Length: 294
Image (tube, rainbow, N blue to C red; front, side, top):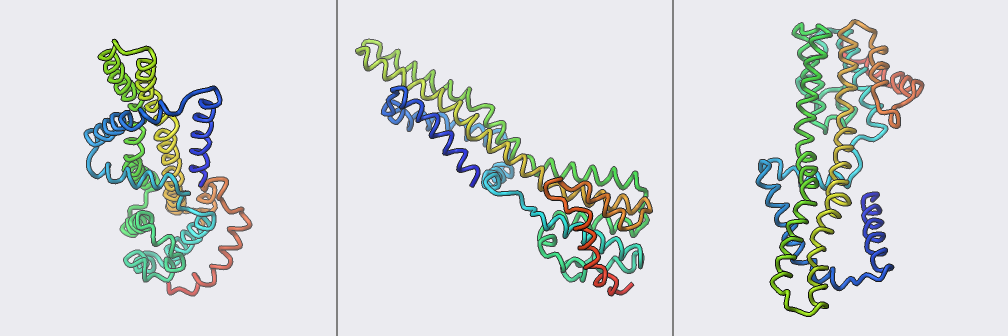
């Protein structure tokens, strides 16, 4: 919704100021179809040439994603911290034998099943299960564990960000493509140099629409949407760092509640539960977790 409001402000102010100053929209409207064909076609063609088919497909989803809020709600962060408390408590209490059934089949796990939104994010649930499972086979050195998790997070982030980089590359090229369209318009005008001044003026104005549209699309549409997508990707990657903080703290031998508190401090400030809110959530969940078999 915020994106739509922003776009309406852009269009209203740009074209409104043009008309208020005496500009004639009929010149723009007449030139717009063929200028947009040149600019849009060249931009899309270059986009296809410079990216893999997988990235091209993901870019479409990325544009839709830029119009949506980040997937993670405030309550999801509290649920994630509670989930990590349950898993790490079970691990500390019963060792590999107690935790492995939850890792082998999260959907059937008495711990995971309390948080269906977290299970639905299969990248995150796989990340949690994979590293806890590695700890059950004695991969418990905190430094090595931290490095391995950092590399995994970086790889996942790189893959998630590929569509955003592709869209930003398109935005960077649009002003130059607009110039190409404008030059073609000038060439067309020079071929009609014997026409009256009024006609030549309209033709030059139409040619300049190409430059105008290239810059407008780059800095007021594709570029901002790419930036919004990057912000969304960044926010959606925060849970991985929270999980990493909790698991590494556990590997360092810290008490489970301390490990979860360290993870809480990795939560984005605007969405982090307070110490008291998290403590209340953990107290509420402790009875359920303690009832699980060791």
